[in-house]
Amino acid sequence: MKFSFRPTEGAFYELFTRAAQNLVKGTDLLNELGLPGADVQSISERLTDIEHDSDQITHELYKKINSTFITPFDREDIYRLGSLLDDVMDHLEAVGNLLYLYGLTKLPSLPRELHELVNVLDLQAKLTAEAMPRLKSMKDLEDYWIECNRLENDGDQAYRMLLVRLFSGEYDALTVLKMKEVADELEAACDAFEHVANTVETIAVKES
Image (cartoon, rainbow, N blue to C red; front, top):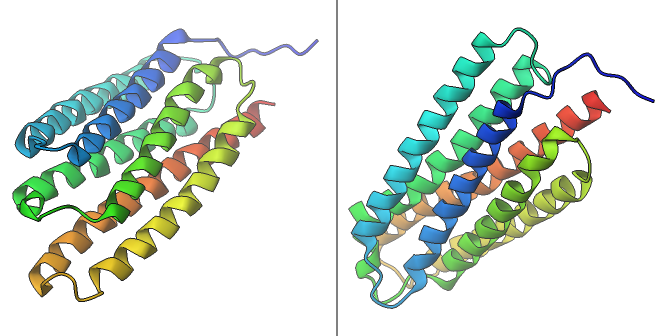
């Protein structure tokens, strides 16, 4: 039987889970952009509210690290995982804000490839939210990081196809510049989800 001198401090896992659930809320809001008559200002404002909540969760996590003598796994890994989850939320918020501030939703329609990229993010968010509670037992996590990495490849493909669409001549130069910034934030969010998964893999290997 394997013994561990590390405590199973539930607060850390709860904070990771709450942070990941916020990512699902964020991608759900981005999916609303594809609905007819979407209220983009409302979507942007709600994304900002969720991002503020995620910031608060991250601050709670850092305080918990500093006030806990023995953590359930390495402090550096706890800090990194919390920081990376927060990074994803920052990118999701930026997408909504840019679409609203740049007035891009006044276009006849947003590119199909943009919605495909949002769909990849939605799948990554749900996978991540399902995985976080399993950190406590460190079991059944391998399928999560493998699938999250596979989805990141799908996101790269959708991003490239979005760039092809943007530079096809369909849009004027200013719209292309604005949309490219949105595309970069979407792609960065995909990468950030992969970084979260890679960190979970690192933690699981150390703790096995």
